[in-house]
Amino acid sequence: MSDVLVCVRDLIKTYASGTETLHILQGAEFEIKRGSSVSVTGESGSGKSTLLNILGGLDRADSGSVMVGGAEIAGLSESALSVYRSRRVGFIFQFHYLLKDFTALENVMLPAYIAGVKKKDALEHARLLLQDVHLEDRLHHYPSQLSGGERQRVAVARSLVNDPDLILADEPTGNLDSQNSALVAELLYAGAEKWGKTLMVVTHDKGVAERAEARYTLAGGILRTVEGLEPVKLATGGAQTGGLEPEGSQAGAWEPGGWEPGGSQTGGREPGGSL
Ligand SMILES: Nc1ncnc2c1ncn2[C@@H]1O[C@H](COP(=O)(O)OP(=O)(O)OP(=O)(O)O)[C@@H](O)[C@H]1O
Ligand SMILES: [Mg+2]
Figure 1 (cartoon, rainbow, N blue to C red):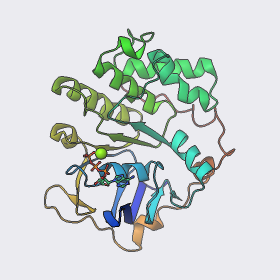
Figure 2 (spheres, rainbow, N blue to C red):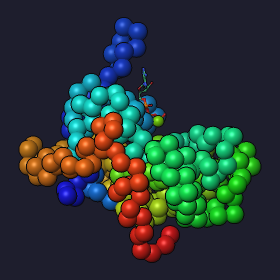
Figure 3 (cartoon, rainbow, N blue to C red):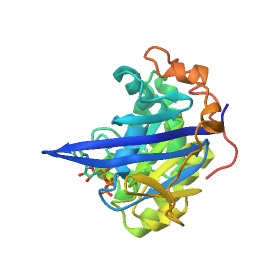
């Protein structure tokens, strides 16, 4: 298995605005090692959410390549993309998007249950994840009965429940005070580490960005290193693509019907250590 999970090359994204064309991404490229964390900062409107949405299959680029786990996301049909989104990616947004009529436990277990995991197993997994974010005493609270920080911690737990390869967080602490920001960020990074997930965080918060192993900024439509503002450029050809052969079962899992709930998805959920 390649140690590179995400490899993005020459990503171009424009939006039409009246008669104008907005050039948002202008050849962004980077790769993310499996199990590592990356943060992206940048001015408002620089394209951070656009980039994250393309990576998560919520939006499509005009051109360029987005390989995740050896499969080209850009080439997926709408239905395969929807399977990719729900099974391979965990999302966390600035707003928690919890379902108001469901408890914390139900909110976390639902994506797994919908994916076909047995209710008992989904509940058990959700309970464990809520323990990780220190909400074992809030399992049966509805979102309206939780604080802002607690809601985001539920969202962190929910992002992990389908055992995704990739966690994408867009301003996960954007709505929180500094104390809650630090706690939610710590639980997010620690959760990703504990479960061996690859994490990409878009943030305006310096402290949240600095916790990542690799730090980039998005400026002028391309990703740059935070330190020198050098454009991130991948070598042409070479190991990045060579090492990204489609990974059989995984690539197949993105095809509708190619996913077996209760299979590898529920296995291997016993990492060592604790948060
Ligand atoms: N659907 C759309 N149609 C037209 N323009 C869009 C669309 N979506 C985004 N944009 C524009 O693309 C640019 C990048 O938007 P994006 O949301 O990616 O920025 P961002 O870096 O996430 O900003 P912020 O830090 O404020 O969240 C913005 O100027 C925005 O107005
Ligand atoms: Mg944004």
